[in-house]
Amino acid sequence: MGIEQKTQLSDDERLKERSRHLRGTIEDSLADPVTGAVSPEDAKLLKFHGTYQQDNRDLRNERLRQKLEPAYGFMVRVRMAGGVCTPEQWLRLDELACRYANRSLRITTRQTFQLHGVVKRRLKATIAGINRALLSTIAACGDVNRNVVCHNNPYLSPLHEDVYAWSCRLSEFLLPKTRAYHEIWLDEERITEPPAEEEPLYGRSYLPRKFKIGIALPPSNDIDIFAQDLGFIAIADKNRLTGFNVAVGGGMGMSHSEPATYPRLADVIGFCRPEQLLEVAEAVVKVQRDFGDRTNRKHARLKYTLDDRSLEWFKSELEARLGWPLQAARPFRFKDTGDSFGWVRDARGRWHLTLGILSGRISDTPETGWLTGLREIAKIHDGDFRLTTNQNLTIAGIAEANKRHIEDLLESYRIPNAVQWGGLRRHALSCVAFPTCGLAMAESERWLPHLLTRLEPVLKRNGLEQDAINLRVTGCPNGCARPYLGEIALVGKSLGRYNLYLGAGFDGGRLNKLYREGLMEEEVVAVLTPLIERYAQERRDGEHFGDFVIRAGYVSAVTAGREFHQPDPQLLAHRS
Ligand code: HEM
Ligand code: SF4
Image 1: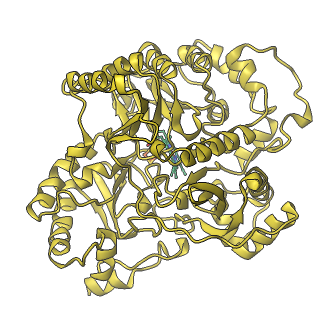
Image 2 (image 1 turned 180 degrees about the vertical axis):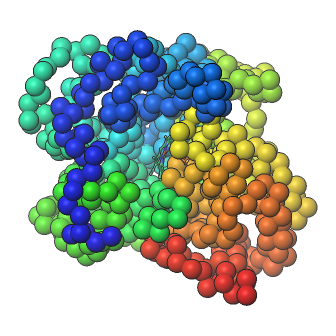
Image 3 (image 1 turned 60 degrees about the vertical axis):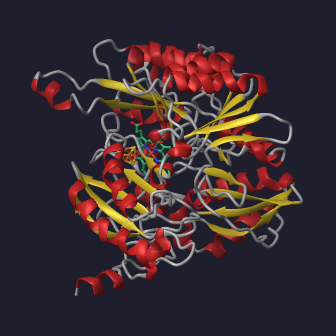
């Protein structure tokens, strides 16, 4: 797909252009009592406002049989830079989830909350309620800069606090300026013809595609820096922030059987000082705004702009806009992409507790009172809550006097302690998929617990119960749980069938490679069992599973996104 071949703007581009800065006919769609849906065009524009129209996939066939329209509901995504919220905000979100959504909060892989199952007539109250809690949903989805993610590790303060502050500044700086959001959801006075200069950065057509930014603080790569369109790697000297390495062009999404789409890891192109961060981010966004492919949404992310035109071209275009060169990138080393669980005390004597929440799902079940338990904790907690990009939660800044009380609440609501989990469970991620996601081809969140109970005994038998292995599951190849960075990844192909990918780097620095296609659960276990047995017997000291499967010849190492779909010589050798 060459860069000059197509000139026809995609339908989505034309829609954005004529939407009057994201107003469209959303208000008419919301007011239409005949259907629980909005018009297809407004559904697209709504994403920029932080909400996706969905329908309950469990009920789809039955509703069709009864000649009813699908059971429409909206997913509402909060914008929360760096994943930090106060106990008051937690309580407000919990209340909205119980009143208007499906009594559940879901922590996402971009460090924020999603509410599911909000019906159309409650959408405005939900979004207004989130704003009353001094949070927002604007630009949580859509072709703009999304939620800025940031390393979660409060006990590394004050360095962490510095880095977190930059993620907030970035988030604020790159917000769309349209007043459409305030008019539609917050009853601000309407303007009929918005001024042309309403969006000085994004313009009338916004970006060609979504744009994701994250800040990592080595040695932790918890945010998967190389999966971001734009990543900043914080560089410190004696615990003082000196600046950031700049990484560009990461992205996970691809489509099955479309080799022109592929995941790609970001490339580090230089270093900037802290006070240059916003300028660099703005210039990167502008290059992508002006050169990203607006003819084909499947080829519109920054990763393709870079591969089509070259990294050298990108760097010189960026530096021409900046008017100064980036400095040479500074050395850094990442250790892992996971979270550390349990209690930690910082230098100021405050406690921080990181809880493991499988798939980030916070709801009450007969076994565990996650939702009620965390609500009770929020009522007495005087620090804050920090979500991780691995769908986990840190209760941060707990006063000594509250520690015991919080421990008692965790126990009474039977909230599990991830410190006692095996290494696979501690590092497992899954996207939402069924029943809410319209793109799901297979189960993901609902399958993960079953898959873990099948694989954990295999690991135990081989003495690997405590060994950390990154497992990532998604219901389709779009990649919402960053599957192409899993040492073991299962990506939905059709109901009950998954493609198995192996061999990503434990530190998030290498993509994985397709090993087997269309496996059912039994086959997944049968294929992985001998690999795990061999790993237990033959691994070298400290060798991670992803490195082992490459050394042992199961798959080849992928060093660039374009190699992701290339036939694997290792695999061909194995089969012959
Ligand atoms: C390129 C095509 C993609 C499309 C069309 C897409 C679409 C969606 C949809 C519809 C949902 C809502 C699912 C639900 O909550 O019911 C979702 C969730 C999510 N997506 Fe994507 N997605 C894409 C790729 C990605 C990628 C590459 C990432 C990040 C690496 C990502 C991050 C997320 C996150 C954080 C969520 C929230 C739920 C979770 O944590 O699993 N998405 N996406
Ligand atoms: S990976 Fe696919 S199935 Fe999973 S949430 Fe994203 S779009 Fe839906």
